Image (cartoon, rainbow, N blue to C red; front, side, top):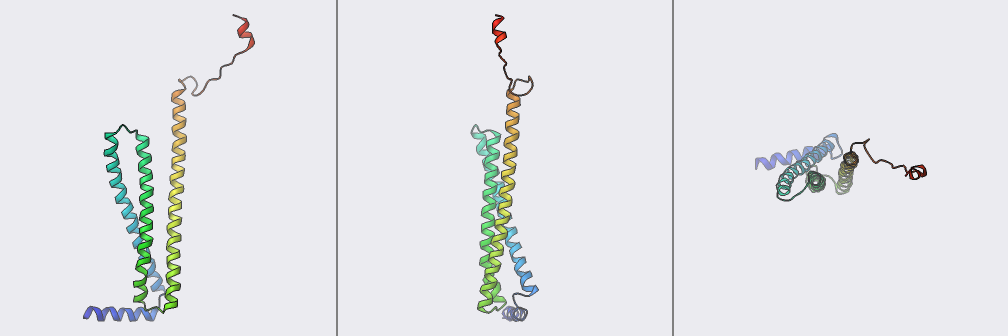
Length: 175
């Protein structure tokens, strides 16, 4: 009884401010960052468990370190993708209850819901594209370094790389 009266008074005060006020936008932003941190937390926990069980599985098979690292990187990227999708969905699902608390008229509620949802999806997509670009860059640099190291190791130590054999006509005449 007291809690419902308190909630009603808070809702009336929020309705007086409006959803587009500094308070409403700030509360929406806080809700998004809460969901975002929950998505990152999910991805981090899942990646730790994946690393543990992939490591155990790699010991039983004859798997090299490079393939283990590549599988782990792909798992981390996949987990963060799932975490961000979950964060955006969780944010979008939480928005109507906040709009209800602010007693927003239907049209303004749809406008705010659309803009907040679009902003959340845009941020998550940009964040994930940055993650994908960083991952692709790291894999590319790692592959170049690995190729360079394999070439140096396979060169026999005589100058580091492939040797060009120079055959001339004079060499054949001397025999």
